[in-house]
Length: 81
Image (cartoon, rainbow, N blue to C red; front, side):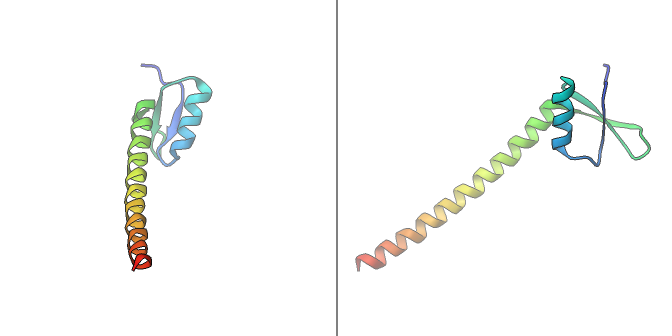
């Protein structure tokens, strides 16, 4: 497998996506401190990581929405009495 681009392991995901997009590639060699290849980052890896983050965010928003709905329900009960 030919890996035309390298990606320093300390760089962020957005940079990896930008490199992949600009080069039209789906994989990057991940390099360590000394420039040695320590792994390969695929576009699918990035998509999976984003999906996990979005799922976590959706769960947090859902929890907050239910908490707010309960608070509003409590306020409605107080106003009615």
